[in-house]
Length: 254
View 1 (tube, rainbow, N blue to C red):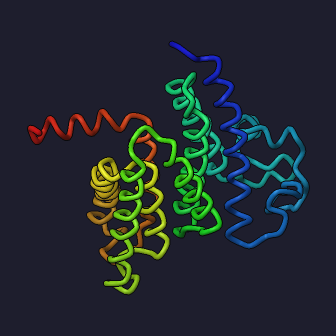
View 2: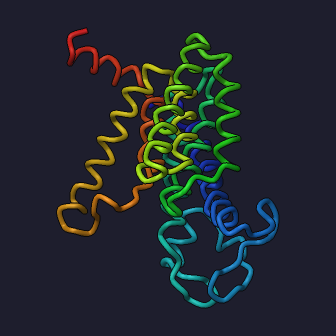
């Protein structure tokens, strides 16, 4: 295995970013002050957590998912978020280490995972995150290997795809924030990967929702956090979109 040591270092930083994200999305959603400052506290007893309580992944495991002060249960959302950041940073660093675009890729991964968890937990897109992510993706598109037009057209298609649905249905089919995620997806992937990526996203959403529809736990009017399906697909295509594209062309004989 190549680049294991740099990838492990990236995984450690990824877990830290994941821990930061669990705090960030909570404070953004509830408009709590001190997004970048202020000590973390137990939501039950209110006591300020110590360093030993804040070690990503391991603190939750050592404390058996409970607060170190009052024993209140801590949601597995915290270590799961930290683990997804650590794993994703590990995989992308191992693949792209030594290339000039490793840093832009990791920054993209950072924003994608924040948007994923925010939408998965709160079923909405925070524009304070998405707009920064879009601005970064736009800036990065000027130095990518494909022509700038491929990413700009992708962004327009992605935005228009959801904006049209939103206005036609008056917000019943998709949320207002989905058009921003479509724009981000297009800017990061380009129009070719975008089209295939949208298909994969809806296929993923279908696989997830069908069991719930069959059991009656969901119905056709149940809201679905589309960002929770778009973001993983963006990661897949950033990681190795060429494989999916080549298989697609092979299947259809193009």
